[in-house]
Image 1 (cartoon, one colour):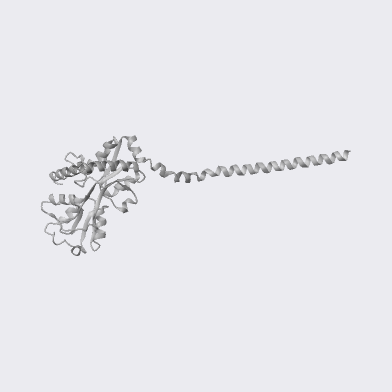
Image 2: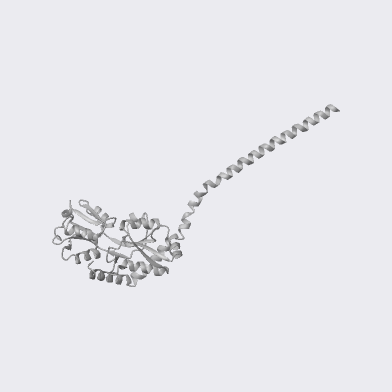
Length: 300
């Protein structure tokens, strides 16, 4: 009897030891599973990043404008009749008229920031300004990094030369080997490079400085929007004139748009509605004409 009890006791003890071992294995598996689950959130930012376009669709710039109560516009205020300063040092011009109309449509105050032209797109991208309005030509290259509004104006491109050289520099052949000027970072720089490959591009920050280079005979001419070029000639005291050279429509068929950071479609829609209104009712054209007259009276 005692021997049987001893055997039974040994059997029970063995079973208890096996249960204990299995329980330990189960706890180990649970701990490993917890560790894997704890590491899973590290990949969540990828899922959040993929959802970012949905946030962009709400137009963060438009939200910023409404919350701040102001529209901040970047421009380069030495380009009459589009943007310049009047005799009271106030921003004016047909582009500034457009900026005010957009601010009014949004129900906010307008703030203008004057900066170098070639820095405006970067300022729009970084959020330093809400949009850029500075006679920006709508191009596929620029459209890769920012969004454009609808076109609000188109203009011919002119070659401005020293008085007496209108016939001399009337062909591409005559301009071969010559320096031709444009404002740094503009579509005119690209136009000279593409349409006048035998000429040398000469760039400066401001058009008055370029005009002086032409007057002094340092460069053959400068390329500029028609309205600006005509104003330069009118205020040059007979030292400049429009060359008889003409770019083809394929080379220089340019239109101007407002520049807005990508991912702000609702804001682009608002701007397009304003452009549709001011171009159809003639108010932008009136602002353009008034700006041309004001710039002429100021000798710009």
